[in-house]
Image (cartoon, rainbow, N blue to C red; front, side):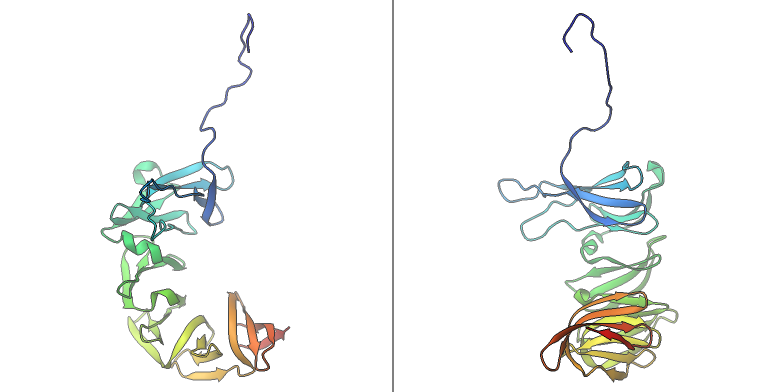
Length: 273
């Protein structure tokens, strides 16, 4: 303030201002954010992206990293955030795991050379496990998040995803049939007799899926044989799975629509409205 005697009333330290950001992933203790707008130059080429991890309790930035530039045909891939505060992201051509709560010199847990492009279709499957996928060739790998070890390699319909429950990994094969793998023995348990539209969940002794007509069916988890068809509904529009429940928007045979809930396991219809 102007005057004969200048006095410092307040001192503010740290980063002031900044770009608007949006959260792209979160767990119980941290969140990943990146800029709302991915900037491009006059030629339409990406100018680079960054992503940061913040502690949810304090807002403190735990880590910041770079991402490949966005291009008109493709946005930057979103890194994975694990329940134990580990970020799976790209570093040049490599895929790396960053431990957010470790000192800077010990943050990199593992590195998989040349697998950065596989981040685009990567997803968490279960405690300590993730699936990496190469959509161009229909190849996927199951990795141990603790050390980056490749536990299992297989082919599948990448867009259809995968379901892991206990020691069973179920996927939709490139030919449309469902395949269930026994991870404990490293062998295929079964393949469905007919192609399926989508696998929904594994629960109890059943595998719940949509057939090619998008009708809800239950396959035997041990053999893959179709055990039940929910014939009162001509098609399933949307599905949400939760612990102990399967919720869906269905189209009835009279063309009306309803919301339904199934018990998991067992498959009993709890309500239809």
